[in-house]
Image 1 (cartoon, helix red, strand yellow):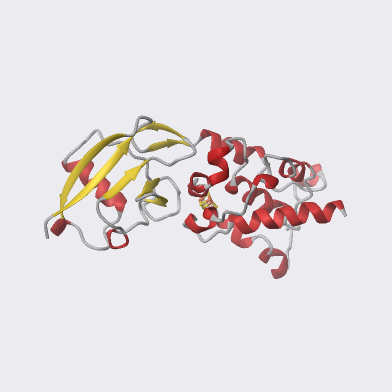
Image 2: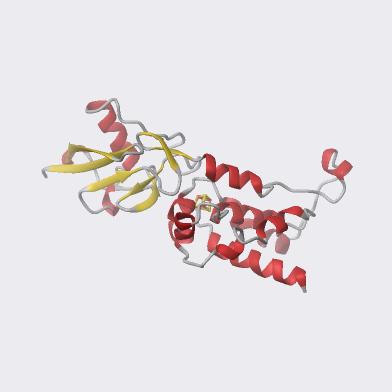
Length: 234
Ligand code: SF4
């Protein structure tokens, strides 16, 4: 059985720490989050990480595991080569240990007005009746609504790496999600997307969609947003 080697690169400086864990204490379905908590409990109380729900709902435990952005609670031993190498998310800052500083990610997310804007302001504040939608109308945005704001797509995006001003996949995805909603009448959101650092910076690398743990396809929503902008101009 032997020992499993786990390398953790901590903080902004990526200080490398190495741990060894007896394999018989793990099983193929042990998650990286469980492994890290075990290491913190038994070997290194100074190991700092962020997590909450343990079931891929909160999006808190994003980190780079063996070179790829993943949720630690969703990543199992059986799917990883050894030694396991863990580091903080890329394209964002690092607060401490494995904890990312997602402020740039969230400020872009907020910037694109991620909420419904009704035509009538009075109606927006005090709706008089339900906003009914057909199945077809719901299908236009439903899959893009499953985003949990984990930041994995942002960390994987090669355009964000070279241009930190790019809005990034998650912000554009949520902007498209609301713009495609039949209940929305916002005019400003599309203007924010139709800029050099908005949808037109995307080079369709697709890595955002590959790493998304919720099956959202941000690469698709970006291309749909481009198409929507062009159609509105015709
Ligand atoms: Fe995370 Fe997917 Fe949302 Fe990106 S689109 S923030 S990867 S859930």
